[in-house]
Image (cartoon, rainbow, N blue to C red):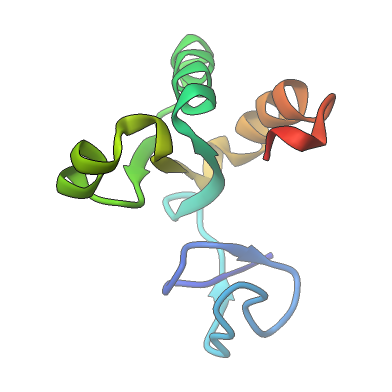
Length: 105
């Protein structure tokens, strides 16, 4: 599996499918990997699930604090990142939470 240091995504190919970076390297256990992006209501549920599973994660808002306050927190999308060591375990949680209804994206 290859890793993009620019956008923190895992890739099977030599070029990042997200940002086009051509300088990928093999992923290591310590790499922080993009997991998923979800709106606030789903992000809160996902945080709880990851906490309960004892999976360390970072949750980053896309708008920034000032814009989120002005536009409202319900319009905010959050990106989740997990260490590669926990990636497979976190993906199982994602699949369980979101595979039933693809309109949740």
